[in-house]
Length: 303
Image (cartoon, rainbow, N blue to C red; front, side):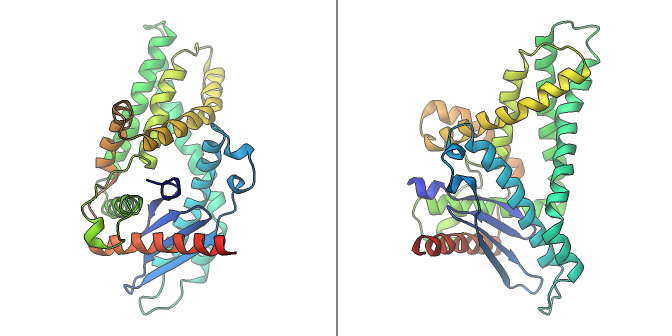
């Protein structure tokens, strides 16, 4: 498997798939009239122009921020496509305006809510036991266990929503298509369908690594008071994410190593929740998105 092949990855959006290439971000999604909407743009990334951004433990933070930023933009664009007239008309102007201008305004509050739920709630719940359990180590480990339970419970809960199940099926299509591409197979349904829906470089696996690594790091932080404890956890989110990204890349690069297979196994198991077997039309969308990313990268290289 070449390093160029492993540079490609993506995410599922509404009735579609986003693929990030080496120099291009691409989107393909199903229009209400059944046609395929295709879109691509050049990546504007510090990773392309800064040696500092490429350094281990720095690149993970850059990629995480870009994934959130581009992911939100492409999600809003896919939502706009679903508002098109089924006869082929354009999306309403107001929806298009929201899709272009609202992503940054929506992203920061969403991150804030996620941090409140997955950082604040586990800490506050375990802090209630402080009168009974005086050991910060024990409380912090319990906090981590609560955080894992919240994370998995959230994924299980949303997996019952019909719209989310379709997104998870597109997620599976994206993984299967990337598997085929990484193995040099033709990008058609016959060669893609045998592949699993789980992939070691999945964002779900990354988030699980974040939660587990946080347990290890947070365990040794003494509890002082509410403000100091929550501030220290929030400040450590970035280095924890940076470490998780390096572990994820290492595991994907050496997935045949027995130790690495053991490390990535929980992330692959968790994808039994966040992916579903796609139908042929979903695979077609994933292929279209990858084709757009490859075309954009080829065009950028030629230029």
